[in-house]
Length: 387
Image 1 (tube, rainbow, N blue to C red):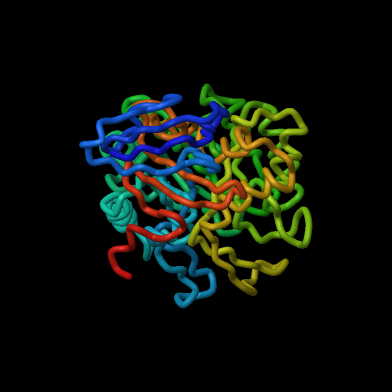
Image 2: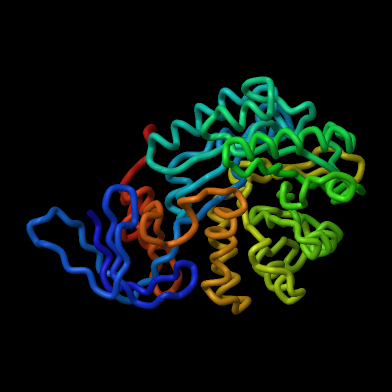
């Protein structure tokens, strides 16, 4: 048992100073005061002058590594447990990217299961940039229905010179299979779309939505702040009811100091009266961030950092004056609802005990995943299997 005393709770809505009791991997009780038999084995955490929020959900991470656009030496490394937990991430969704050849669905599912064994929650998308979609069972619908960890399709690339350039009909088939697979398994069946710098932008997604019965909420386009034009179109897309995802690791020029600032983009989006519930942040952790010249030639590479996820949320709170309870939604409640992660994203009784404790300066102090303390007082308590 873990008892957190006298802590300010954002669930993500502010519910005031509470005591929170964790038993096993669940939040058992939230109350103004909880008193327990002192003979019980209880870990007590003093929450005075601290803030409790839900554990973070990073729903676009290259857990196997990504890249290779500059040759084999530019393949980025796999993510580790503490790459995630020390930055407050207790749930991660893994995906393949450009390389669906040397990194496979078998590799991805094994990595996901390994992260689960180490103590965090992990799900994955089936597929990669390419069409036809490379799956585990040779069928999108079967993957989603039969494989516990698979919740949708991704990262299918559109509007990018590295894309397989699927037709509208191809995209309809993928969306249909994903949707039915999700319905039959009570999963999201979402299609995570990589948006590149090309001319197509959101057009293919919109054509699918306008000409079929597939709802706009079946898609989750990412990299929506990669350049001004994509961002402008993303705002229009969100006004139609679509979900938009901002990549916190993106290095493309956009808003200020030559770098995209998702915190600023969030403020602009909210000022346009777009519902906060339609917006998520993801890190693109361990993904390669290649740079190409105007002719598509590779000229350099950066790597996505999981640390950027909460950094941009914190910037939204401190620099953009977005209230805590609103800013943290983009990495907690929103992705949980969009991806149908039913026990994630909020601080409620009987939900999974995924918790981040912040100091008053909003620095991460303690991280609890599925009821287990991973980080305590900024020190790693549960380390990677291989150090």
